[in-house]
Amino acid sequence: GENVEQHPSTLSVQEGDSAVIKCTYSDSASNYFPWYKQELGKRPQLIIDIRSNVGEKKDQRIAVTLNKTAKHFSLHITETQPEDSAVYFCAASNSGGSYIPTFGRGTSLIVHP
Amino acid sequence: AAGVIQSPRHLIKEKRETATLKCYPIPRHDTVYWYQQGPGQDPQFLISFYEKMQSDKGSIPDRFSAQQFSDYHSELNMSSLELGDSALYFCASSLVSVANTEAFFGQGTRLTVV
Image (tube, rainbow over all chains, first blue to last red; front, side, top):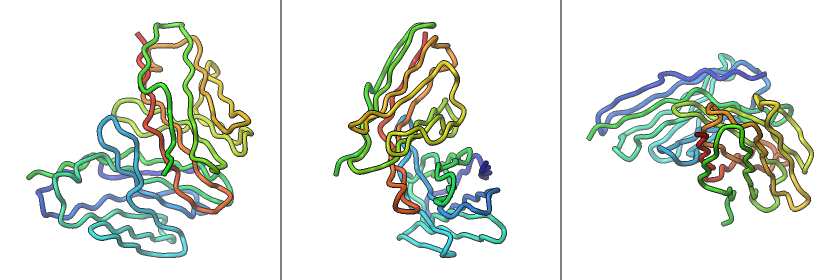
């Protein structure tokens, strides 16, 4: 099955800095890569996703890049704000096979004011 | 817009008791997933249903079972509860028949086994 590795496990930045979280996946058939933000005790909520037919997607301060050859994808947050502090999970799934999202271990992002 | 509804939000049970968690997916979604999330951990896939049929099983203990009913709601039944079953249990739903769609998560049920 799919295996998703996520790094770093903890990321501490100053407000206004950029934050980058990286994930790798093992199943070359995976074609959908969502990123979820989870605040303490709350549900994971989608913040951005990317499909395998594109290499980059941007939504305001958040961008995701995908390298299918290397099987890795990254989340970039610019101009971080304290309210960005949360746990971020990457995930991978394959619409043509096991469509179940497999999650990475999560990255705890702390943005210091 | 309607979201995924889970009940109860909190549940406290004693060891060896049973628990039933309920999930009401987003209308017209064809797939339901159950995840278990321990403290500080990522969501672990337990089981999924596609159009009311069990489609995949993950790390679901034999003590647990689940089903999806004709009205598309799903229930996770947990028996012989152990202290280690204490976790957040999320239900999610998606429309798999439309490729690569987001899985929407419910608010979760926090189960505490004492």
